[in-house]
Image (cartoon, rainbow, N blue to C red; front, side, top):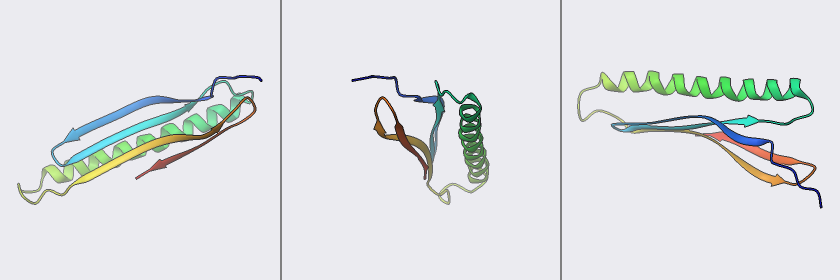
Length: 98
């Protein structure tokens, strides 16, 4: 049986807990692909999506801070990945945010 290291790992992480708001954004990162151009493109897409989520979170947080006490809503955002299948030939994973 062949064994390989999974090409998927967690890259940059952003976490925050401010009042009623929370964020847990774990940017996936692919390493070790034979096709380096595809690897670079995937990592850029993951990074860009994470940056957009962080931007949205920070904008919402600033808007929430302007509200009077007692009117502040609860808000949470997460960006994660999950390996569904990983063997010597393939790694199957999904990313999701909510």
